[in-house]
Each structure stands twice: as C-alpha cells, then as structure tokens.
Image 1: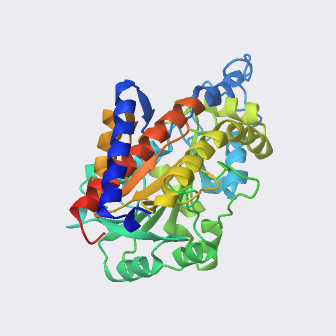
Image 2: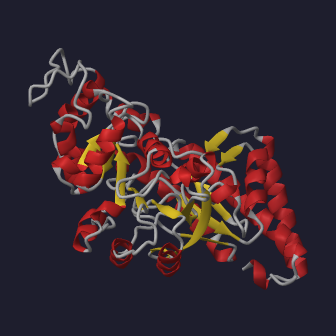
Length: 427
C-alpha cells in the first residue's frame, strides 16, 4: 500500500508511474467514458421496431387511431408495459414522450408556476425553495434545480441509500424543502439500491411542507447485470400503507431499453395526483406520440418481452463492467488508494479516490486522451467537498477501448495519489 511506503519507495513508484503515463500520452488516443450512453450494438437490438411493428396498422386494441390527436395519458397497451414494470395501476400512470428527464423538468416547472396538488400556492411564490439532493447523484437532476433557482442541500449516502436520519430531520422542520431527488435502484453513479428499511422510511416521512414531493427516478429498474439482481420495494404501495400516496412521483423510461432518442417516458403516481397533473398538462399538449407507443407495445408485447430483451443488453455490457472492475481490483485495490461499489446493475461505477485527487485524475486522463465526467459533477453546484468522486461510464466504448481507457485511468489515479501524498504528510 502506498501509505506504507517510505519516501524513497514512493519517489521510485512515482517515477515508474510517470514514465508509463507519458507512454500513454504519446499514443494520441481519443477515448470517451463521460456519459452513460448505450453502445451501437445495444441500439441495434431494437432496430426491428422501426421496420415492421406497424406496417400500416395504426389502430390500437381499444380502437384509437394513433396517427391522430388525443389520449393525453397514453394508449392502454403502452401503459400495460409499464404497469407491470413499476407495479402500478392503469390510472396511476402517464406515458409521455421520449424523455423522462423532460417529464421531470416539466413537473418541477409546473410546481414552480402552478403548484402541486394540496399545496397552498405555487412554489415560486415562496421566498425560498429547497431540494434535498443525495450525493453523489445525477448531475442533470441538480442542473434542473440550479436552472430554476432552487437551493440544493446535499445529503450523504450510506451503504443502503441516503442518510435517512438527516432527511427525516430536515423535512420535518423546514417548510421551504419541497422535494428530494432519488435514483433508488442501481443509483447514478453509486450503483446502490435502497434497502427495504430506507424505502419504508421514505414512505413514513412527515414533511412540514404540505406540497413536498419525492422524485423517484427509477431509471434502471430492469438494467440488471447478474443472475441475482437487487430488489427494490414498491414506494407507491408503501406510501399507500402510511396514507401518504400523494407524496411520491415515480419516473422511468425505455431510453436505455429501446432508443435514447426515440423511447418512451413514464410518470407514475397516485390516481389523484395523475388526474391533477393531467389537468395541468392539458394546456401543454393534446397527446404524445402514440405511434411510438404502439411500436413499443407491439415490439415488446409484454413485460416478459422487456425482461428477455434486457438479457441481450446484459450480454453486451456485462463484459465491459467486468473489464473496469477487474482493472480496479488488480491495479488500485492493493495500493489502498480508492474505493468503489460493485453494482448488480445500472450504467455506472462510482470511484472514490483519496481526498483531493478527483480533479487531478480527470485532468491527467484528459491529457492522455480519455474523457471522463467532470470531477464534482455528481454533487450539487458541481462541488465535491472532498474532491474524490469520479463517475465511470463503461457502456459506450468497445471492450478493447475500455481496457485501454481503464489502464490510463488507473495510472492517473496512482500519479494523482502520489502527488497528494507528497504534499500531505498526514496521509
């Protein structure tokens, strides 16, 4: 371990690592691990949806002409796919356009401008609006808050989810806290799934604000990487048990199931919430793309079809995750200069290096031709207070590209760690 090396040993190690790093720089590589994008091979899996799923047959099984206006909340056969996926009822779901992020943005915008069911006034009429943000988390969630002037409060993660003691205390005392972002299954980027206890504590929250909402972004609910996937408790059902079913909005999409640019997005909530939201949405759209909804329904047929399809995705991306994890186990673990969670699904691996090394590691990788997500991006306002968390996105590069990229990453981690240790005798 680096911490056990003498100054002389550490200097010798630095020279060797530096030499290796310069070799990588000389190769002039261009590798990108910055975003969680499906690879081309994954997109190819759904190409038949564009070819023969409609073949001129545009009428849904309930008689809706999907070429025309109407059906604001989505056709029934599309709803049926997601009802099984999210374990919700027919009248607890809206099937929207291609982007769950857009549905989340719109829901925040409507809350700011028009308010939510049960609220005394629109959020924008309060002097301050605050959101709780478990971090490391999804940078685009935080960007939505920042764009609308919503103050973000960072909540740390524990092994089974966010710090519920902190969440319970904050929401019970502060009426200005209007919501919390959650990626409850294979979280972005930690890969953690919330435990049953955490979900039940969410369902038992007693917020001071009568218009508080849990934004439950269940983006990776079917994105498993093992034969023993994680299990996530149904938050809506748990909220019904506590009489607080109106407190949660659930989101998901097929962005990483079918096509990121042409999938389906979903909002699920209590029936009363759905009716309230539909009334607000009626001024925004007459209906989403029902032809796309019909294509998806006919291609996948049912939830079992989605599950079988996701096995094909797993076959493509599991070797990529293994390549990253094997390299970290081999190159970093013995040196004691990093930690990570081995996820059972999702799209990311979160790496925690030594304090003060994340920005330097990302910079070194960039100079050697490997683009990573910016250090700090997984925290509100882009500020990681310990400068240690880096999100790794293994899905888009080929396995060979990934092996080279993670070699460079490990070399950068070593070099950044030695530099910090040289400047801090307490490490």
